[in-house]
Image 1 (cartoon, rainbow, N blue to C red):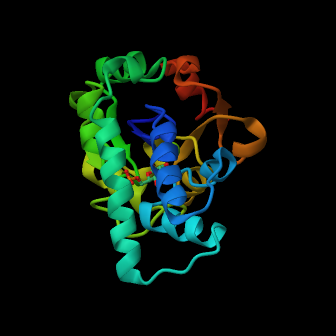
Image 2 (cartoon, rainbow, N blue to C red; image 1 turned 120 degrees about the vertical axis):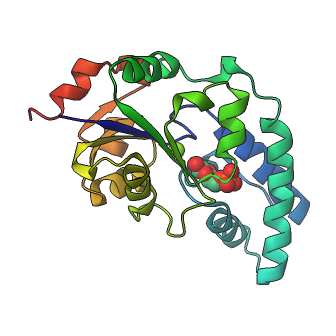
Length: 217
Ligand code: BG6
Ligand code: MG
C-alpha cells in the first residue's frame, strides 16, 4: 500500500519554531518594532526570504533586495548559533520509534523541508542516518504549497507519489502533499489541518497499522 514516508522537519520532528522566534524577534527589535508569537505562527513552513518579507511588512518597513539579504543572513547566524546547541532530547516524542519501525518494515524515508539548515539539525539530534534521502531548502526552488519538495523526495527514493505518506504541521505543507498526489498526516489541530487525510497531535499516535488504514478509506 505505501512504500515511503516523507517528513517535514520544523514542527514535526523538532520544535525549532522557538529558535526561529527568538532570532526574528531580535531582528525586528533591532529594526525598532515588535514581533509576536502569533506572527511567528504564520511563518510555519514559509521560507526564510518570504518570512522576512512578511515581517518587514508587519513592521511597516521597506528594504532593498540587498538589505533584505543582509538582514536574512544576520537572522540566520543567530538561528544557527542556537541550533548548534540542540541535543537528541529535543526530538519530538514518537519520532525515533516511528523512523526505526519504518526502517525495520522496509519502508523508505525522506525529509521534505523548506529549511536550509536541515542537515545540521538532523545531525545534532542524532537521526540523520535514519533518512534515505534529504530534500531541503538548498535543493528546492518553489516553496510549499508547491509540491516540488515532496515530488523530489519521492523521486530521490524511486517511489511513486501515490505510495508516499507525508507528515506536515503547516497548512502550506498539507496542500503541497495533496498537490503531489500523496496521502498526508497533519501534526497539529484538526480545525487548522482539516485538509489532511488524518490529523494527530504527535507522531506518538502513529504506527504502521494507522498508516496502512489510510489506504483502505
Ligand atoms: C521551515 C520553517 O521548515 O523552514 C520556517 O517552518 C522557516 O519557519 C523555513 O522559515 C526556512 O528555514 P531556514 O532554516 O532555511 O531559515
Ligand atoms: Mg513544519
